[in-house]
Length: 260
Ligand code: NAP
Image 1 (cartoon, protein in one colour):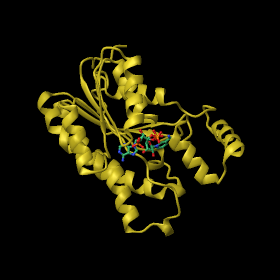
Image 2 (cartoon, helix red, strand yellow; image 1 turned 90 degrees about the horizontal axis):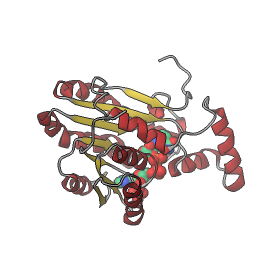
Image 3 (cartoon, protein in one colour; image 1 turned 180 degrees about the vertical axis):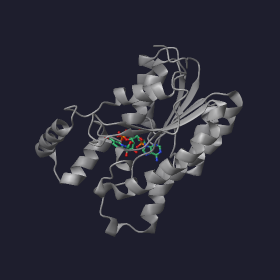
């Protein structure tokens, strides 16, 4: 299926590896020019090279910076130019015990996983509406639907973003702009390795065995891949998905057991 977005321009935040990179690759394979960001310049350039190799012909720009800062966001917006597609992403907050978190920890989590995507949406949405096309996908977490106690900062901060998106998405969709949240369950990335390591206190061979056990416990029998995550993101950005907005799309291999 042709997703009808060839020649469009995307800003994909936090995309030098993992789920963000999966989204950038999938969009580029649909002919979308991508601007990708991350803090570490070296890995970011490696990611850009991978995208260019897998999707020859598209323009790939890189912006090294912290997307959770005002300066990082402005640099990314300036480099990307006209943005038709925005994929919001940033590193997730650290796991821990809520008794250990103070105001600064909460401000940091809310800044990264709620306020940053809201400010980026605000920066691009009116231009998209004026041009009658826009796609915004926020990478959040299945923890919004089924909170994971050790990830309290993530559960809380991301829920705020979901509340905002539920309202804002309805205010812009008449003008061809959709805003959806894409909720990963467990995907085999560096972040998952850190989270499972922190949750279980295991390392080395023990951690590998824990990985196998957890993967087998998912109805799909495995962790997800960044590639398949990216392909669903690309679909949400397609012309075919124009009537789909304000949705929380759970991608978890059937792990969430409820009907709704
Ligand atoms: P990952 O493999 O660790 O990749 C994170 C990417 O984000 C890297 O490219 C990293 O590069 C970049 N990044 C992190 N903080 C940044 C910042 N402040 N500014 C710019 N770039 C930044 O993580 P992932 O698994 O893809 O996770 C992506 C998001 O999905 C996270 O919020 C995570 O919590 C959430 N999530 C993941 C899973 C999962 O199973 N993987 C499940 C639920 C939710 P630099 O470090 O160089 O900046």
